[in-house]
Image (cartoon, rainbow, N blue to C red; front, top):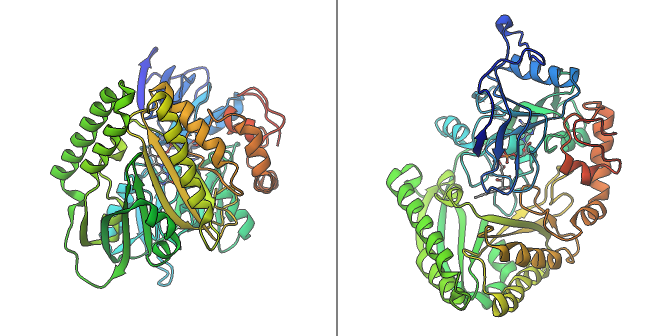
Length: 499
Ligand SMILES: Cc1cc2nc3c(=O)[nH]c(=O)nc-3n(C[C@H](O)[C@H](O)[C@H](O)COP(=O)(O)OP(=O)(O)OC[C@H]3O[C@@H](n4cnc5c(N)ncnc54)[C@H](O)[C@@H]3O)c2cc1C
């Protein structure tokens, strides 16, 4: 994330609205009017107070202070979310200091990793890998924080993998009174666990959680280019014959790049995940490409050529055996591109016609749009195929299997919003299609009423559990943006929001 400006005292002590930690009876440090923006620079806010708690007691003290002073309170993690899930005018919490991780193998049939919410995926990977474990599924970026990955319903890849919230064994939240509340798969109902494990910060602050892990394994990964039309026509066979399949496509390319893997007993042939040189060269390459593509896209008639050139430069073929962590965290540079994205989940029938239809919509819209206006730089379509999720608010809740399509590109170009709004509006017509919460959706025409209608059952079930658990009766944790979707009686941020 970026600190855009700092207009007042940094690390000052607030004496009026003091958050007094019980740890050594000291005050929690606060920064006033610190402007925050997400990584893609699509959202920003300047909260009155920003806190960087170092201990659990600090966190509790800030929440209690927020309750006492009737302030709204939100959490930011690594700031990758592109929708407005975070902004608040009142109190913003940064949890990166709360990052302790430990592996617990006391239950042989259910090993877990216990992590504070601010621990990054990289830190968790490091701890579990050294003890021979891996998470069953994982997001691409190792610098995302686990509290956020779980709260926002992030998903990995894999035909039988739901979203990461499904891995939660227990979770500890701080409610609006500053009380620690623990929810455990052993003692709480499935409905409660399904709601509290994906709450986008609306049920409280996630302090700590435990996730199921499993002994690590190797996979045989094949990267290859395939003919586009033929591949789309044979999606069901290709996808179902692998543990994981992902595709990347660039406009006007007649080929598509497929990465697939299956579990293997063979020894690894490549261990490049930690190679600094490869990571640095990947970053330099992708930034150079972004710059060139941006320059080229000022000349609309070059859009087609640039897109084809980029596909040819980046999509290499390979065949290797790697550990599952190497396979998942393969894209070494994707986090340095400040690209915009829209991402949707589509339910899959036997013949995958929803995914085929969604892909066709991208192609036809891009072709028609580029004829008239050219294209924003760096357009890239990524597809994953996953299992359905149990989490109440997951985009794949209630689905058996789903396809996620992720369209990214240069959002600083005015054409980006127009083109992606067009495509998203078409995607929404596919039955059961819905947004990934962390990708941009605020620019899609009429999206709020559409989501309210599409997700009405899930939203009602979530709000009922939230009310029963009495985690936040005053709506202190609700963001204005989320309130517009989740609450018919939207109140101004910082004031009581019903339910
Ligand atoms: C290049 C790139 C790759 C991506 N890859 C994936 C992917 O593989 N899979 C996927 O699903 N998504 C992916 N995303 C989308 C998104 O980044 C992820 O959802 C990610 O989990 C966000 O993590 P973060 O640490 O940046 O969280 P943030 O964006 O900082 O926060 C996300 C949400 O979590 C809430 N939150 C954070 N911590 C807490 C807490 N302790 N308590 C309560 N609420 C909390 C925040 O308030 C916010 O609502 C990707 C995005 C980009 C830009």
